[in-house]
Length: 163
Image 1 (cartoon, rainbow, N blue to C red):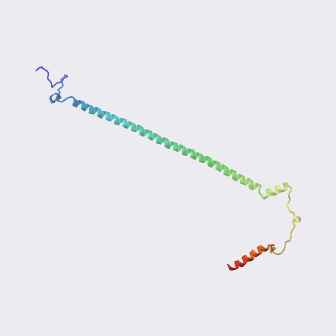
Image 2 (cartoon, helix red, strand yellow):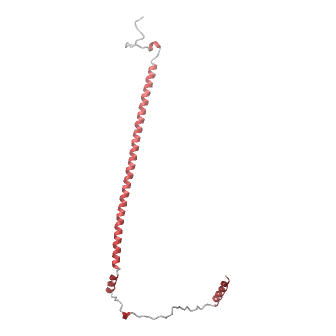
Image 3 (cartoon, one colour):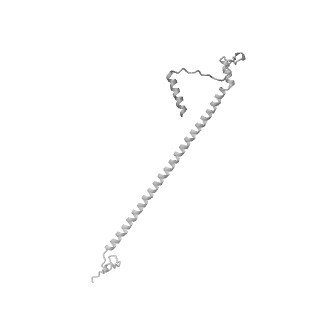
């Protein structure tokens, strides 16, 4: 024997694979499988990271929409309040104008205005009484109808009797 023991490798580690006639390809496939498992785990981690980022962006979009909706509602409420205040001002102005109109149309103001333009109250001497007929009956004179109209009215009266 030449002094080389095949069961040991160069670093004096005992290797049973040399006796079993196994090649290093099994180790290589196992390493490749482990590398593929590690690569798949990294892909899953990347996918998880992407999903987390997408979920965070979705949450931000929803949050933005909610805040924007609240701002719009707030703007609408402020517009409503502004319109209500304008309505209150208009109603108070209307009440003031009605009171002013009533003060102008009071009997005392009308009498003063009539005196200013030269009108005076009636005296009893200025009142004239007119006598009209004592009867409350009004007489309507007959119309002068032509011959054909009279015939038509007689015919109508005749047919109305039979109805």
